[in-house]
Length: 358
Image 1 (cartoon, helix red, strand yellow):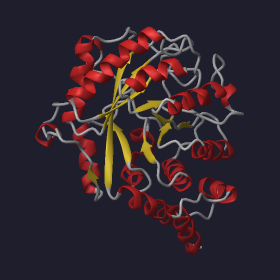
Image 2 (spheres, one colour; image 1 turned 90 degrees about the vertical axis):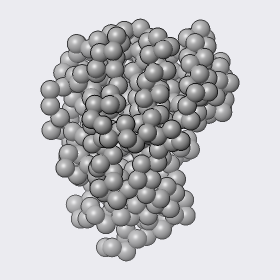
Image 3 (cartoon, helix red, strand yellow; image 1 turned 120 degrees about the horizontal axis):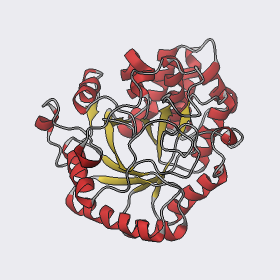
């Protein structure tokens, strides 16, 4: 049995993926031993990234007011969740949060805008902010702004945008169950437009939306085929008022198996334990660092996550290290309450759920 884990690890070191049968076994096999599986995933993780952990900070630059009907999202037109809705923040707010992200040790600052996708005018405005952030701080910039055409992608690429995020979220056959206002192919086209213009694509999935094991495996191999270098794995946060809440499938072990699967299928990609990791992984949270080399801190758009100080303590106690950046101010991180993302008018982000999902 242990030879199977060793063989998968060696295949990953050669850049080869597990077979379809092995991939399904990783997620569903009743005879899977979790710790050997995590070690198999750690082998390529360590080869490509050592024990470094990249930290990402999200800034919800524009919240709500979205015409799309993505059932998992509190910002969609069909959600009844009582979120605060606001248009794009001021440049000063966005730049101030970029500085806080840089000084907290973030490797990447991720600006997220609700809506179907940027127009040429909004892409031009966003490009100016990207240029300013990159001129001030030694930090990479990622934007998530919905569907993207080549013209808008070119504007952002010319500004030096490092990555554009647009998650596949689920398989093509399951996509109609979670959204009807755009298609799976629209998402594929967005990733291809970004890549064609020289922007690295960032794309992952959301687990816990009624998908099958075959759906998860399909997404893992689709991301491999698309050569996506940055893959966030989100665990559905059941926000009251959203059409898609939870399917009850996400035990801590299921989440860890999914992270291991994604690493073994995409061995050199940046694998991120993203939204919902705190509530779903719970006491096994540190084990996510064996397959994943990247995490978010401080929150996930409309819900709040672990703060920087708590997260860095977890990383170090597990034997890993924060990658950081040249302006990383560790003393500030060690001061409670020093770093906290805010919404408009300085209001601290509040979670939309009262307790972690179970």
